Length: 103
Image 1 (cartoon, rainbow, N blue to C red):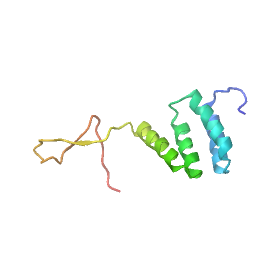
Image 2: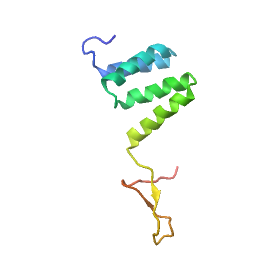
Image 3: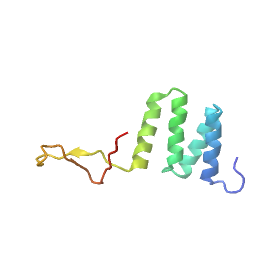
Image 4: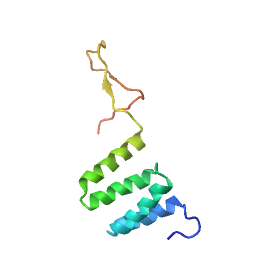
């Protein structure tokens, strides 16, 4: 499939994207499976797995992939409301600073 370096994840990712974009989900799934075997932490592989499930209308399987990729990319924990703060509980705290933006 990928000449030269058989562990070339960027090349495998491009191939999987091409398969997804041409509705060849079985082939894409095989490539994504190999990507995730080579690197279980691959953001691209996890995202593509979610896209494949979504395209196949496998919503229950797509959701965990997208949730996982969100956590991987954002690397955030859900903010919590501080109790007993002088702001009457409106202050948001977390282990990592979160920048909230209006859209």
